[in-house]
Image: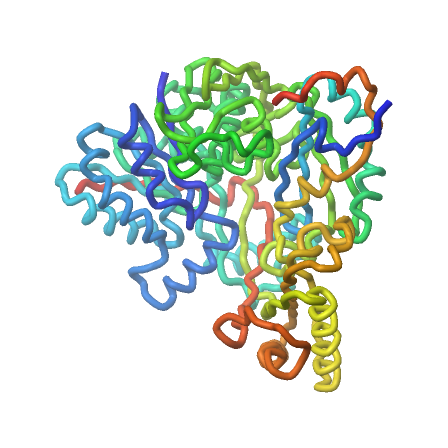
Length: 116
Length: 448
């Protein structure tokens, strides 16, 4: 097992809907999806975004594209035009999630990550 | 197969992108999305000042510049550029075309601002979808109210034979789905096909954000961002489609770029709700189908709900944001000290805010507590302080306390821009639902 940042095995995109940010997390290779699905739980994401996400975290699975979608409620200082944040739409939360560290079996990391 | 292009991901997107779409390769339809959630309130204010305004002027300019290609190559154009004055937009577009005999259709009926009191009186509360509060609680402060119509209304407008369709508030996805319904004669209960067209619309609605823009995978190697190609849907009657772009343009379309855009602003992937259908993103099957081509198939959908979504905007107070930039040495310590000094001065003035927020650009503005402590010799830090209040005078006073720090606080400070920060009125978004029986698209067609 190797402890690596999510950025080694996944990519992401985030956006907003009111005061809720969504972060889509995508496995860089199909075989990484199981690792994401097992370790990147709603609870872990909530803890990761401690101090940023003040509400609940919901998680949805899209195994067809090797992806998870997280909804981070109460994460944008009111959201939209109300927000005083520089990143009022949570556009950089995708990268923020990729800072998370997870355990990945060594054999999965032996190949260079490739898109999708 | 028909080719439907997106040439505008939001109002403010590239002015050249739509022209590139009509000039750099084959095309049947050009779609353009001009409306963000609060754009309507800006347009409503412009309309109140000048009854000839209230629509996306950029669209008229685009039609003027592209008129020859659009007319000669019979490209049909669908744009939600009408704002709160789609008829006014039609008049201006007709002039910009400068050619007789071109049919322009308008989809109106979405503007329900004048009907709000009647709806509320009849027990339709237009509760806020996020908070559950009834609209009555902010009714005096409402600035605009528009129903989101879908692809079906656009298909009806195309059926009039119009070459250009101008709408008020419609879903972004409907701009792309509409041409498919029209061309392929999809029926209102062919849910899988309607869902496919909806997902095609979602994929291209943010322009180049599916063709390499913002793509995290290997971004340094994405070719020719300067001439990035905007997306084109090659749609087939069975609901399968390919996302591609014109040959020779920059950017890159891969499974990675497409998957990222699929997840953008997504809620529950099982139910992506539009006026036309409920689309299931977990049914999408993707395949790389050659260079810069991704094929979609297998998409499933379910029956639409009996409600329209309504976009309401209301005045929600005032805010201002000020910035100051501090250089090495001790850049972060200076910015932090400056923030403390500012807060103390605001306290002494007795100013109370609904919210006040400090961020340090270069340190933690994006990732907050997830960001590491900055290096001790960090070269520069931007102090960014924002405040919000219902009381305009409180925010006015706040803006006057930023600039003095250029002279009467910690040293090596710059970057205060053009003086005092601007006080902005906050126009907030109020999402609600309206029974479909309460609104209907109104379609009219005129010839230039």
